[in-house]
Length: 277
Image (cartoon, rainbow, N blue to C red; front, top):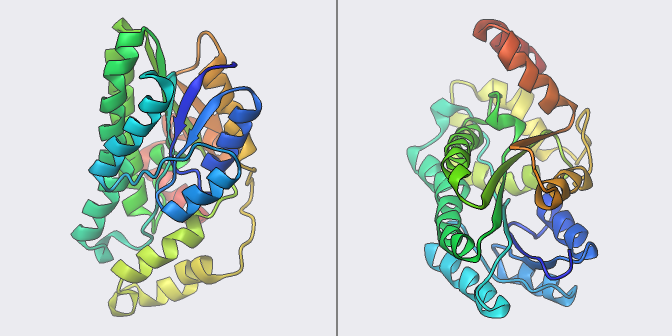
């Protein structure tokens, strides 16, 4: 794949960081972007080209893409939309402002960047756009309403875009991981503390018995959790196979929930998820 170029977002840790290293090892020229400049500096020290890109800041999206295109002479073979965050909490306790903010980062910013790369991919005659969704884009889970709603929206936008791009040389692909080793839980704590007044909630005891323990406990592996390399393996297939799949499930829970949502009545699936939380 020598000479192929890709812009990856959310590369400070986890899925994006592993993807950047994995693709560079395969000969890709990787532009590994991060939201914070200090993380970009760290990646530059590791030899990456790392533009600062914050999905919540439209100017930074266009600036980062401009840096990439200046470096490549105006071409880009692939885009991997990956950066996202969560705001844990019950939906009834979630301020609308928190929902607006997370949609800016997890949906609208992705849309802005995707729209910006489509014209150049049309002009060069090829391109692949890969969106990293989640098992939570397939089924809901309690306490995750903000994140789930953004992933549901992303699934819909990506599915429609894939169909619309059938008459172009651009492939649009979804990757849907389940539990993957990452910092998303730790990174969600500041957002939880900013937005959720759990002590005033009618569910305060449920927070104490469930969510708070999960957020503030020492890091531990979830059942069926896989390393980020499991996602990178699917990404490589999505980028390099001549006929990529429209979607890639990663981890057993994603395969299971993808099947159960087709087979079970809604109330039965709701009950199963409620017992599993």
